[in-house]
Image (tube, rainbow, N blue to C red):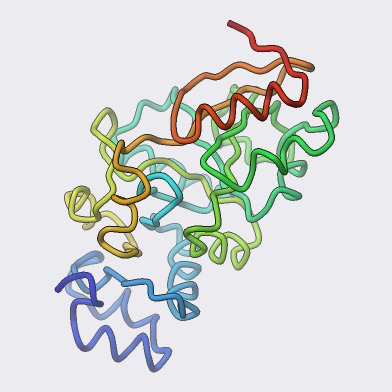
Length: 253
């Protein structure tokens, strides 16, 4: 029954609003007591997530594709921790997650994109690659001129609530060890739990029903004016391709 705020004590503290004690009264930084079941009335869970992020902790969170690991993208030490926990090659960039489509232009160059394109692609299971703007944390993907940007679909609203409450982008990657399969059940990345601030859990079957293939987002490079390149086929690939061609963009093969 670990999906139900496993410990009664933890559940009571969430209900009472005394969520901060979740992080400090447990014998280890991460235990089953830090697994929080999302139920649609998640204000306390959002507060817990924000506290974790502001403390530089990593959180596990459901997205519209697979479970993700997220940190505050402006926190350089948290970004470094994310690479360490995943055992990820530092040369592999991280994407950022923003709260809505209008936020994209703050972090990536969008001025030459066809009007309406981004709102046709997003929110949804698509990562767009754009030339990055200088305001983005220089310690996030240093030396990389582009940035991948996500606005997840609204089927899983919790990540939107967290990003909006934080007020700045999340650095986001899949919740697994590097080169291991994507996860649609929290138990599949349980080996990572001791290194996480909290694990936020949606319905057991929800991700299974929407993404049996365990595919990540489709990644589209839009950094070249008038062109696009699919750098990874993922969820909604065919739909994404149709939208790009509808807006008159030419595919780089």
